[in-house]
Amino acid sequence: SEVEDAISTLETEGKVTRIGSGLTFISSTAGWEELTEMATKTLADFHGSYPLRQGMPLQDFRGQLRLKSASFGAVLQSLTAKEKVTTDDATVRLPAHRPVLTPAQEAAAADYSKLLAVDRFSPSTEQPVDIELLLFLVERGDVVRISDDVVYLADAYEDMESRILDSGAGGREITITTVRDMFGTSRKYTLAVLEHMDSKGLTRRVGDSRFVR
Image (cartoon, rainbow, N blue to C red; front, side):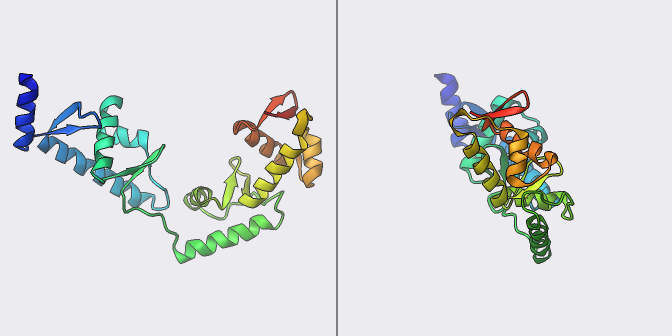
């Protein structure tokens, strides 16, 4: 078509840029370069403020760029294809960004792990580490945060989850009392674990009991 021919001519002259995997969105080259610069600066600022986070939530990134959903998808595809950004299901980051703990943070993380290990099924609810370090440890797989104040070492939580699921095999009822007695822990911890398992879709609640899904 004449329109397509005109667009192709402008593209050849470097005046417009096609965006997205289907190349259905078109931007002036100057506008695209400005948007690319805004995108990389937005992420650089985010990484500077939150160095331990894997990336910026996609919806926050879209909000910063002031884009509608359809055009944002196309922009993200092109930014990724041009290796300006890297994305996963929920976040976006600069390709060079790698969260790394400082020696002091590694020491704080080790001390926190030791604190949680003192009573592995009823871990301390003290949180001597700041929230950013805690979220990093969750992301790295060191710990599992099952509520605002209950955090388990990952291996302790996985042990509990496995044993609870085994106890409910064959349609057997899982009760707060049996789980509490199984691990010698309090109702508070038992409920937190069971509610977390409900939220993961591993168990379903019927009254005060649970059954494996």
